[in-house]
Each structure stands twice: as C-alpha cells, then as structure tokens.
Amino acid sequence: MAPSAQGRQTVIVIGSGLAGLSAASAALRSSITDVVLLERAAKPGGNSIKASSGINGAPTRFQQQSSRDLAFFSDTVRSAGGRISQGEPNSARRKRLISLLTERSAAAVHFLADDIGVDLTVVAQLGGHTVPRTHRGAGKTPPGADIVSKLVAVLQKNNRFHLKTGCEVTKLLTRTSDTTTVVGVEYRFDNQLFSIAGPVVFATGGFAGDGDGMLARYRPDLASLPSTNEPRPGMHGLLTSAGAQVVDMDSVQVHPTGFVDPLAPNSHVKFLAAEMLRGEGGILLYKGKRFVNELGTREHVSSTIMGLEPSSGPSRQWDVQVLLDPGACVAAASHVAFYIWKGLLSRMKVSELDEATRETIREYSQAAAGKTSDVFGRVAFGHWVLAGGTEDNDKEVCVGWVTPVTHFTMGGVVINDKSEVMTSTLDANEETAIPGLWAAGEVTGGIHGDNRLGGSSLLECVVFGCIAGEQASAKAVVR
Ligand SMILES: Cc1cc2nc3c(=O)[nH]c(=O)nc-3n(C[C@H](O)[C@H](O)[C@H](O)COP(=O)(O)OP(=O)(O)OC[C@H]3O[C@@H](n4cnc5c(N)ncnc54)[C@H](O)[C@@H]3O)c2cc1C
Image 1 (cartoon, rainbow, N blue to C red):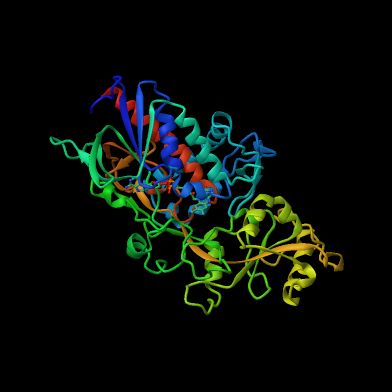
Image 2: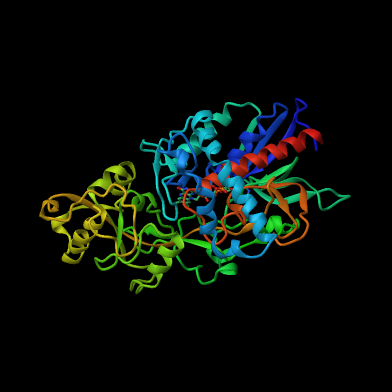
C-alpha cells in the first residue's frame, strides 16, 4: 500500500451513508490515517439521509427511567425470530453481534449527541420495542438528514478526510501473490478507471431498491412491491467475488406504511410514513376499522395488511389509512407539517370522517383512556387525547393513505465482531476472515435475523461502522 504524500496511511471507505461516515470518523481518530471515501452518487448520504424515526440506544441519558431499560437485547433477539433459535454456533455468533449492537448503543447515541452535535433528546417507542428507546431531535430536520449533514460537516473540517463523489467502485483488488488478501479498489470516475490502495471498509447499503436484480433473485414475491429505497443495484456481488459468504438473503423487511401520494398513486418509490406516527399514537384503518396492533413488529403489521384485499389499481398496493388524533399530531408535529406540505397527510375534523371511522375512534379512545382493553392487544397509546364523545367533533385529525413497501434487507455479507468480512458461514466451526476487508451497515447480514427493529439500522451503522473504521485504521498503521 502506498502511503499518502505526508507519509500517512490511507483507509478506503466505500459508501457515504451512516455506516461509511461512521467508519471514516473512527478511522480518523488515528492521527496517521487518511480516509478516502468513495461515493457513487453526486451527494453523500445514501438511504441514511432519509431515515425519519430515529436511532435506538439504551440506557441513555435522554430516556426517562433509562436505568430500567435492560430489555434491548431481549427485544432484539425476540424480533430476530426463528433465525436465532437455530442451533449453535450459528445462534451464539448472532447473539454476539446483537450483544455488541445493544451494549454499544448508548455510546453510539452519546457519540452523535456529544461529539457531532446532533439533537437526540426526543425518545419514542416503536413497534416491537417494550419501552421508548428510539431517539430523534425536537427540531424540523428528520434524524437521518440531521445526523448525516452534521457528520459530514465535522469530517470535512479534517484535512485528512477526502470525500470523492461520482466515484463508483467496480472491483476489489487483491494481492498478486495471494488473491485472498484485499489490497485496494478500482473505481470509475468520469468514465475513466482509477485504482487506490489500502484497507477497505465496504458500506454500500442494502438491496431493497434493487427490484429487478437482487430482490428478483432472492425474493421474487416482493420484487414488484413499491419501495422506500433509492432504485440502485446491490453491491454484494463485489464481496462474494472476493470469497465473502452471505446470510439471510431472503429476509427482506416490508415496512407496513409507505405513503400513497394522491398525486402519483402508482409511483414505485414511496415516501415513508415514519413508524413514529404510530408510536406517538396513530392508528391504522381499513374501511374505517382497525385490524391490527399498530405497534406489532413490522413483519406482523405488514403481513396483516397484505392479507387484506389489495387495491384495484395497476400497482401492488393496499388501501389502508393512517389516522393521527390531535395528541399524536402535536407529538409528531415536525413530521406532520412536512407530510402535509408534501400532500401526503390532510387535516380533517372528526365530524367530517365517515361513520365507521368515528365509531372506531369512539371505541379506541376508551382503550387509550384505560377504560377497556384494546381488542388487538395494544398497550401503549402514545399521546392520544381524543375522548371518544361529541366533544371531539370539532377537533382535527390527520389522515393519509399508506401501503406496504420494501424497506430494508436484513441479509448481507457475514461479518464477525471486528466487522471483518468472513469467508466462513455463521455455522462453520472456525471463523475465517478476508484480510484487508471490513463491512458495516445494511450491506451486512445476520444481526437482525428475520426482522429488524425500527431504529436499529442507524444504530448498526454507527456501532459496526466505528468498529470497522478502527480496525481498518489499525491494520493500515501496522502494514
Ligand atoms: C425512508 C427510510 C427511512 C428510514 N428510517 C430509519 C430510521 O428512522 N431508523 C433506522 O434505524 N433506520 C431507518 N432506515 C434504514 C436506514 O436508513 C438504512 O438501513 C441505513 O441508513 C443504511 O445505511 P448504510 O450506510 O448501510 O447504507 P446507505 O445509507 O444506503 O449508503 C450506502 C451508500 O453507498 C453508495 N454506494 C453503493 N454502491 C457503491 C459503489 N459501488 N461505489 C461507491 N458508492 C457506492 C450509495 O450510493 C450510498 O450512498 C430508513 C430507510 C429508509 C429508506
């Protein structure tokens, strides 16, 4: 590997989503490391910049009664489902990754808040979590955009950080004498090929937006669903060509609520109706009636919707409404204002709703007030304030149409607890890593099992991105 002009060593990071930015930040902690971050798009941020609900952490100083939040590990294991109840050593390796994710979660949130200056003071409870632990800011900027923009700004103050956009990595380079060791990458910029040498951190994201490619290969049944992800090809093939193993590739998260834009109802890429809309008190309706515990796991809520009659239009979608009462609207004010501005939510008085919906509100308000138990087993009602009587008639609710969308891919390349990319499967007796190659973020698999908890993807980007950056930087230095 060629040192940089000042005798420093170069770490190469591919992808400028939160995993890549976290890796870059960690690698730069060593004063003799330069970071070159290669990004295919014209601007940094990837899908990370779209994140709208927040990042998990426990126990953090922002949580109320944080000392009592000891359930993040068990919530994650439960959400991971059948994948994790398989036999050892598979299950032990998965649990090691989950331990790292959850044990380092508070540090990840505090790092973003204290070192990067991100406001993460608002904490909500998302589906599948037993307590509120998903952090976001109180201002108007959604958490993904806030985290990415502040992290990029901090990184760009460092003269050892070099962000190169418009650069698509096309190949991993290996040693001529030992083709199992990665020594750099080849990339295309402005229709010309270049190469760069150094340890490589791969942070190229998932494949939920790759409908005709990787989704069609691993989950053909979901390939035609709309998606929240940018339509771009998955990059896992570059890693498998270097010997990486993949895991859980058929575990694709369908998010229950992508907004159906009334002006473009059949558009393939949908805006996410953030899960916190339900966490703060929103309910889901089909023909005016609730049909599910809105705070069940994404898998449960999505599959319940997909068991309903689909809509009659050309796209594969369903006619479900999300409804927020005035309390939920206030608690989610910045999101609501944005969605109303985009034409995805509209305000209506309770008296203007159809009779089926008004009856649902009457019943649900009783459960939210603790007078009855909820028929679908919902026990957390967010900030719901409607009382269910005639006094509600002039109060305003927000309503929008939503449908399931492909959102996140749990599967990806196998990594170990050092974020090294593995040539061994999770089941192998011995672990073998590809020298010179680390990965973090959605391109990796095995951490979330069957179902990722909302808020845990941004978290995995920070936790494993930082591990990958540190490890790659240490390797660069000892070379
Ligand atoms: C609408 C939406 C809302 C979400 N909300 C949340 C949330 O609230 N909380 C949460 O935890 N998660 C959320 N997620 C999921 C989360 O945002 C992503 O899973 C996560 O940010 C992925 O980060 P990443 O760094 O792995 O990949 P990305 O952020 O997707 O970044 C990958 C980058 O790699 C680049 N790249 C790809 N291939 C190449 C190549 N060959 N050469 C160079 N560059 C390349 C891409 O252009 C991209 O910029 C949300 C996702 C979406 C789509």
